[in-house]
Length: 193
Image: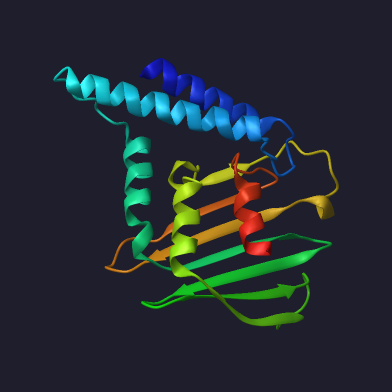
């Protein structure tokens, strides 16, 4: 189990650091490899349980499982991404019992209020939950920082995600500066569609 986890962490680390300062782009082979690690780990944990032994999950694994379990309790997701030249794009998804509404705004670094505001778009709540569940955001680190960039300050990309829950659960936040989770492109594409 530890060897599988170590190999998966090494693979994900390689993906996240392949092109520092750039959003990682997963190939179909990358996705298959990650899924294969997940299946191997599930099978190994099941075999261990069938042998009458239990595996003690790490804190990060417990956090990831809790995130997955709580996806249906999400009530709001706030997401921003941008930089000096391109402005800051902000997406907000409000989820109620019947639907999810996504709003969008764009601000340059000097404008208040935003220079572009779009009317809310209706999303299928179940589709949104399936998507969030499928990308395993609970495995993301809290912060992704690449301070070793040689680019000028106006080429930098900052981003952040805030996830709010019903039932008084504590909000979850992720963010970064010129560094991203391995599957961030999938997350970004969902919002930009």
